[in-house]
Each structure stands twice: as C-alpha cells, then as structure tokens.
Length: 383
Image 1 (cartoon, rainbow, N blue to C red):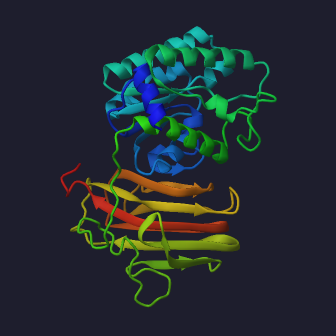
Image 2: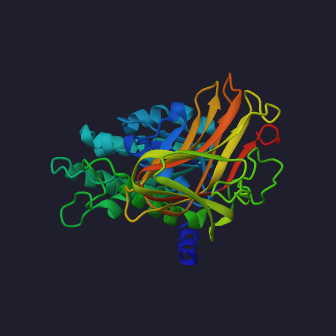
Image 3: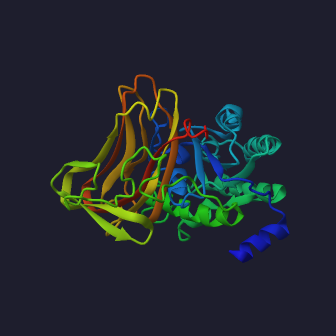
C-alpha cells in the first residue's frame, strides 16, 4: 500500500479529499438498484464497493441509469452528481456508446467534459474502463475506446479502474466464467470482483474516516435497544428487545465474532430454506423521530456460504404508514467477510413507527448481523 501511495504522489494524482462517493454510469452501475424505493442489491458493483469498504466509503447516490450513453450521463451530471456534493465520482460509461457504434472521439469528448465539470466543482473524478462484451463485431471499437480512456486518465492524472483487465478471459476476450450471464452485464460474482479491485485501487488515497457505527450497547443516540445484541435474558438465541419469526428452517443464535463488537446475531438457513426468517425491532415512540427527520441506518454483516448464490437475505427499515422504506442490503447472494452498511433516509409523510428488520432464507448458509444502529441525525444536529 505504501508503494501505491508513493507512486501516486510521484504521479501527482488528483487528491481525494473525503469519503463521500457517487457512482455514475449505465445499467452496469445501476444493476438491481431501485433508487426511488431506496433498495440496493448486490448485482451492482458500486453497491458492493460501498459494502466492502469497511465504512471508509460513504454512499451518497447510485447514479447509474440503464441504457445511458456517455452523452446522456453528461447531460445529467449537474443534477445527478454535482448537486449532491460528493467528494468523488466514479464514472463507468461507454458500453452503450460501443453498442451504438459511437466513435471513440465522441465518447472521450463526453467523458472529458464530465471530468472538467467535476474538477471545477471540487469533486475528484475516478474513471473506469468498460467490461468485456464478447461480441466480435464490437470488440475493435471497445478496445480502441478503452485505450483512449486509459490515456484520458493519464492526461488528467486520475485514478484508473481497469475493470476490463480483471474481468476478461485472456483466451477469448469474453468475460471469465461466472462473471456475466449475458456477456454484457456482470453477475453478482463479477460485481464482487469489480468491487474488491476498485477498493484496492482507491483505498490508499482515502483519508482515514469511517461511517457512524455503535460501539456500546446503551448509546443514548441509538434508537434501537440492545443494538449490540449483548443481552438474551431467556437464552433463546434472540436478543432482548428483538423478535424473531418466520421459516423454521432458519435458526437464530448469538455468537462471538472477531469483526463485530458485542455479539453477532447469526441466522443460519438449513435444508434449503424455502422462506425467510426475520429478526425485527419496532420503534413506535414518536418522541424519537418526526416526519422529515433524516435518519441513518447502519451496521455490520458477514455472509458465510459454501459457495456464491447460496443464501438470499437482506437488511432494511420500513416506515409504518409511510413509504418508501430503506433496504441497503437486498437479496445479497455473495460472500463477504467484513461487510458494513450505512445509508441515510428521510422519514416519509404518514410514518407512525419505524421497523428495523434482518432476514435470511431461500437457500443454505449463514448471515451474521451486528453493531446495528438507527440514528436520528436531525435531532443530533448532524443533518
């Protein structure tokens, strides 16, 4: 890592001054993200990047839109990126340009215009090369444009994420086996590879900061009681102040884990569980929140499976009487040893209670949850 930093300083790469990040792109970045409903799955490499950063990257927005060309991305850069004031923006575009036979000079012109606008707004651009296509009719243009993207990054001294190099099968130019289902869009496994690679490249240049996370069980600002799962008065494997219900093929227990302070709530699906089991707590004290307050939902998680796509589970909050809710982890299907989530959301109109829920099922394997928090940033003076 020290060598990477030394090389960056020698090359005078654009500095990253904070950890707030937006992903700008097309369907490869958007994937199964449902932005209007605050729902985020693991098919998006960008959402996996956030979850795998151990709190060092702070999610601001997934600004990927399916079908976008670089011209479309440029046209919405002000509203979908700059207006949200991130510290950095990761740009991954061009796949639809190549699909539409847009010449390289046009794609690069659009990307360069985005870079200039971001720099003018004091936002650090980070740029990626396009993944493989597995299309011999398009590969010549793809390689030409990716080469030009690398040159663009060099000219502006940007962090380059060469996604093509980590996804491509060197024998045939297609995706490596299991990395894409249609030779165009990465699977959750391919997105995992992209996310791990991207964090390795970005992390040496980040300031050392982490997102909010509870570290003691009686944190007065944490709306969740027993958020560190420390107490279990009746020794039934369900933490006090929480309830568990649903599929009998999923068991819940409280265990120690080196990556989690307090206890981890381990939920294990056996016999290919056909339904979900839930671990849930409801906040009905309206002295703790009001419509329009900004709240943060955060915690740690571990996905432990024998192989990928073994267990489907999620974490989220629902607003009783108000929509939408928030699901920072939806249908998570790939392994992660030390995951972390942190998302902010505004309490919607009509809300009378906030329900925090974790679930496991529809497969075999285990998920661990811990250090979970629900913070009212407005009341804390942080919104």
